[in-house]
Image (cartoon, rainbow, N blue to C red):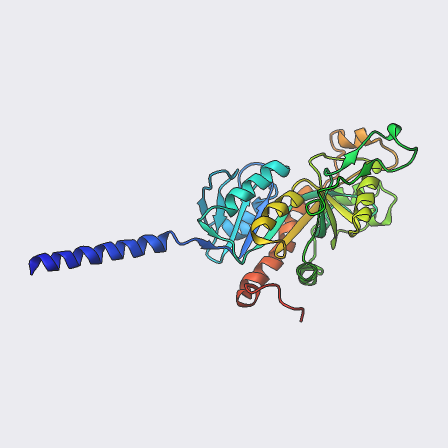
Length: 335
């Protein structure tokens, strides 16, 4: 009889331990994943890069989770919001995203993704301090290019490469983009006297206005393309691909989207960019001079813009989490 009692206690112990182990290893249900590309130093207490304001708002009391293959730890709070610094450029950012998506510590089956960072903008479409939601993502690098002198005078120096049709451009879910604009279009953005003064160097009315929330095409390129000629080329590509006007130049979104699309599709992806520079100099400076400004000649507004990104992005994040019973099923129809 004692043997049977002992055996029963052993079985009960094993079942209890197994249940506790399973509970402790249950994957994190990720409602919103926030991807930043770089941080300047620490996650708090110094000059903020792309992640620090996200960290302060959502993750300062959260645990960190190390994922093999990801650049930095992933942070998750108790409300299902997770975030990480993925790395700059297509390879670093997409490699981190792939490692995170395939890790069994997380459940991304119903997640929304906010791909967040700074950007440049053409002065005809935006200004310093703007925050834009990407309606289209285009890979700037996938195609054929040649030197201008090797083609027809004044003609385009780019054409698409066949075989890349499904990965050279992504139209993000219009319903989700429209929701994001509706939730954030009235957000009051921060600005700085330095940025206000810098804008006046440009003749375009758009470049001179105050920052606002807008939408348009985000152009992803590993090359930090610069100058009026390449800006014109970027706009030419968007028109060639039937996308919206080019409003932001960045280095990661199309690549990360390609990775996410392989396992979760693209319907829950948002690209969020804050403009910290113009993609070309003003009419009184050369492209190289604008790329390498003298001390005190930078655009200003960086600190305000990285804060603006989170002011805008948090409105969508909080709305999704608060209304998760609805949003978990997919992007709801507009009210």
